[in-house]
Image (cartoon, rainbow, N blue to C red; front, side):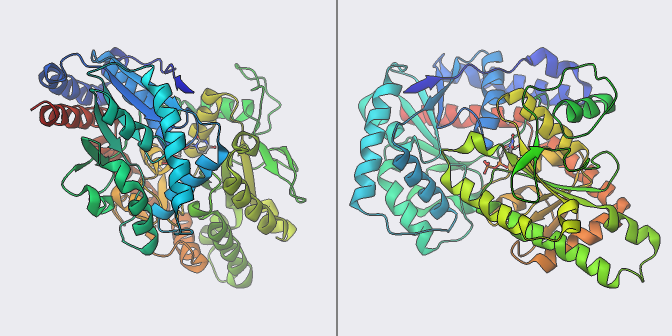
Length: 493
Ligand code: UDP
């Protein structure tokens, strides 16, 4: 199937423009759209990806599409669906290879599977298209389908790749060797960083950074009472006080000593509102570096126990009270991602092997996914009550979780994965560790940040300004309009 997704985004251009610090960005976008829109000639735009929920791409499409529609473009979102789980296992392998990991042996069997599923998907997507349309295809899953459609129809096709590695390895060569024939038919391609552009697309690619939507439930401002209400409704804090809004039908859960799940306030309240909180929120994925982060936090706590006696109370207290929150999607929502479940299992085994006091200091949290809105609000509130937001990715194409936290003025501790380096200027917007697999380096950086409130404040302010200047949806829309207009010119020259 190819499912047309109705974007559930409620903000309009007027809503954005009414907010003083966003008004300028909106007006600049409108002015540029006025000159570029005639070059689109009323053509429809279809964004195609492979999931309506979960992960960075599904996150950024609603804001982008809503603003394009508000500007007068007939913009639409199609999700490619395939019944064959082995197809998504293959595209996940390709994804990992582009990030330099995994088995590089891709042969004829894989090619045949990719082509067969792409042909079927192309047939279903074609039902929505007509000549003249502009197809923007995101990532490797629908890439084959988009290429076939471009060969069969009078459309313009752009491939948007959200992943990449700033290095060429046997793995990346294998991935691009596999994808090259499918990249060929596209009129243009878009990458997140210049280092990610493979040789086969050199000269046919533009760089566009992803963005966040400041009025989305994930990012909008929340008053203190709202933050507390969301955390209480979502089961992340215990309260005996009534709240204005009702408890969510599905609440957050916390991993227990035996590895099972129970309400997140069991066996005791997390202390989210009072303790120094260090958080990482991501999909369960080995490349997100959950395990070394947990080891780093353990090492920080153990060193404190061993030689913390010499520290002054002001330097010891934050480390003593600190808690680590590792949060990700409810595993029931990712049963189609065996690799993700295996990564969570590794976290589970490491967590269950910890001593009781370390287990008390670390919370593995499953966030409910049934309601997109409630999940977004919980992520928003959790990021807002974190003293340090960590993204310890081994590899990262961009890392919207970091952009989201930067927007909320958080002090970021990131790895030097290429995507994070696009966003965080080291020691200005946050702190970057060189090796995300070295618990001691991470522990030292974490300790430094937890002990230095002034530094956290300074990082937070700078990070927020950086997002304001470069990573909001308004500049993202402008960049897309430019790329679409220039691609059309070449296509119909
Ligand atoms: N996310 C979420 N709920 C979760 C875990 C993650 O909404 O339980 C969101 C997160 O806020 C971010 C996106 O998923 O918007 C992840 O995007 P990112 O670019 O960081 O990584 P990706 O998943 O695309 O590799």
